[in-house]
Image: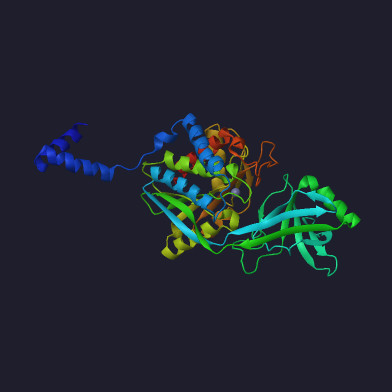
Length: 423
Ligand SMILES: [Zn+2]
């Protein structure tokens, strides 16, 4: 304290007057004081309020916010503003995207009986009036093929959601690990039904009951959609990258998938706001995860061009952390998984993490793969550990988000940052 006062009075003499000191000091303070938004999330109650106020603004007031729509860009703007409160550097990265839509349908009839059905995004439409044919089960047992009665040609694919009712899905995921559906050559019509209706399909196969599917689709001309990247610079170039996709599925406001996880990431940005860090921390809200991971691919390519992709030491990808208290951890890195287990034990955190020995460079983390990086992909399951009742469904609303699950994510990954900074 004394030393500081001495320096200060010395400065007054050098500056030659109090008036000048005030002016210079004011500017110096402005230039030097980092952003600090820690007060926004410094108690569990404030975090809960923060969670539900953003969930309301994004999932209730805006609703469905799939990539490529004005609603998505409204959400991106909210996320950007929140990052700007916490972080000195925030950028928006735009990737071109051709929005796919169903202009009519989908519908699925087994005989006269209509089943609930959702389309895969990016598929071609059927002819008007639909396709009528016979069903057979694929050898894998995983889905059904609809074959035209006359030509014997396979015309459409119907899959079953093993977790519950019909869900929207994406035509890219099973075809190419990384990629984007080509509007010039969309894949054949694909549909999803709920597991409760599977016996109806089985009967249709056995009894050779005609099945009719109908959907007309179109792609809109390419238009840019954004991802938001906020950086808390560290003392070294080494970087910890957090990813959470900001776009919702086609048919859902996406409260658990993935708005709540984006909000957990924003809470981490606030919690570390203004604090000196060893490694740089980057928080990326990606756009287009539900549509071929377009935003993540676009930004990773930019980093590669700039020669900074190699700075990334850890890529941690949050997807739907709030379905239940038990985090599911996918990584080849035993060290990181052990660390998460230790954190649960040391901080007495609710929930039992479940470990999978699969690659963490999946989904949005995939394009960030390079030899120097370790990856962790995190999601969760419902309280019974099996079902996902609102996954990719219109019912994925803020009311289904459990505050304690968001708090688990905040605690675990806040501590993970502290521990990774010590390595
Ligand atoms: Zn998701």
